[in-house]
Length: 117
Image (cartoon, rainbow, N blue to C red):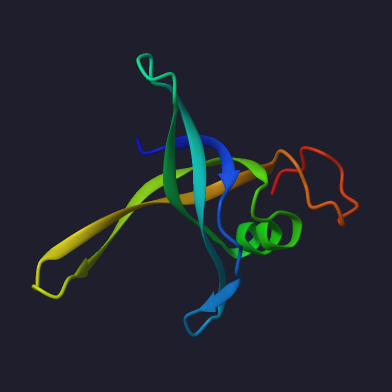
């Protein structure tokens, strides 16, 4: 089973793209997720994760949320690969969002709280 549940803050400006011949909506962004505290230094431990949202998830995320907003995401972990300049294959883990819940909203939108997309 490959499921992941995250709650975090969107750290990048959202850009809605259309990819492929079918022009499928896509939003890629970085999610900051708190991962506890270091017991010695008392500093917060934070992970920055790459997330992709597709289709209606992408459209609604772009329309109703943005950088600095809190969201919860249910999805799966995927990996992309590429070849670097030395010809070595590198893998990039990415969360593919399957369900997104807004935990706060853009101030300009007149929407109800806890809307699920």
